[in-house]
Image 1 (cartoon, rainbow, N blue to C red):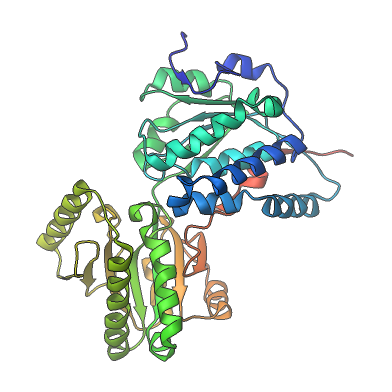
Image 2 (image 1 turned 120 degrees about the vertical axis):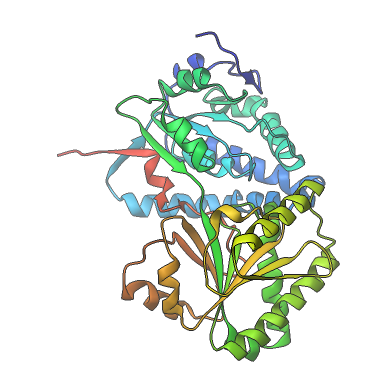
Length: 403
C-alpha cells in the first residue's frame, strides 16, 4: 500500500528501508552512548526541568543505570544465547504520552530495530522529548541508531497499522482496552508476539495506626511522595493511585484520614497544582454520576484539585474515574480484606505504614488474583524492566539453544 504516515526525521523515511538493516548487538556501545546523550540533553534543558516526569526519565536513562541494566542482563543470561527478535512496532498511548520511550529504549538496548508510532496528541512534555530525540538522531555520531529506528505519526488507520504490523516481530500496544482490542484484531506474522498494556487500576494502602504514630517530618515526607505518585500525568497513569484504602480500626482511620488529606490540601496549594477546565468538568460529572446509584460521601479540599469520595463498601469503580485529583476512599479492617477486591485489572499498590516483610508474607500466604507491583509511596511511577508482569529485557529477545 502507499505510505501515508509522517516521518519525524530524515535518516529513515519508510519502514521498508528499516527492514534492510541488521539488528545491533544487545547493549551495543552506540546504543548506550545514544541513550546517555539523551539523558544529558534532558538534564541540561531548562524546558525539560519544568516537568518532573522528564527528569525522572532522564534519571532512568543515565549512564549508571544503563551499566546496572547491562550487568544484570549478563548475570541473568550466563552462557545462554539470546539475540534480538528483529523489529519491534511500538504504539504509544495518549494519556501518558512519554511512557513509550521506556519500552522503545529497552527494545533498543536489546538490539532491535524499532518503529514507534507516536500519539497525535501534542503536549509540551512530549514535544520537548521528541525534539531532543530527533536532534540526536540527526547527529552523524548516531547513524547506526538513526538507520534502525523510525518515528512516525498518523491518524487512526487500520490499513497503515496492518502494513506496519505485517513484518514486525513484536508489537507493543499501549492504550485502553478498546485500543488493544482494535489493534489485536489486525494480524501479525504467526511467528510474532503481541505485548499489550491495557487499562489498569492502581491503589494505595495505608496503615492508619502507624500513620498516627509517625513523626510530623515523616508524614510530611510521605505526603510529598504521594503527590508524586498521584498528581504526575494528572493522575491518569495506569500506576497512579485512585483508590485509597485505610487499614485499621474506625477511630484510627478517621483521625489518620483527616490528617492525611489536610496535609495534601496544603501541599496542593503550595505547589499551585492546576488541571485543565475540561478535567474539572469531567470530575464533577463523574462524581455526580456516581452519587446517583451509590451511597457515597463527597468531600472537597480548599480547591477543586482534591475531591474525595468515601465508599462505605470498598470497590474499584474503574470505569468511573477521570483522574484530576479524584480519590475513592474506604476502610479495611485488616490487610486480608484486600484480596476480595483484586483482579487482573489491578496493577500497582503503593503502601505506607507497612514493612516489606509484612507485604511479602501477605503475597505468599495465598496466591493473589491481581497486582503486578507493590511499592512504597513515591515509587508508583518509577518504570522498571518488569512492567505489568512482563520482563521486557526478555520479551524483546529470543533464545537459541545450542547442544
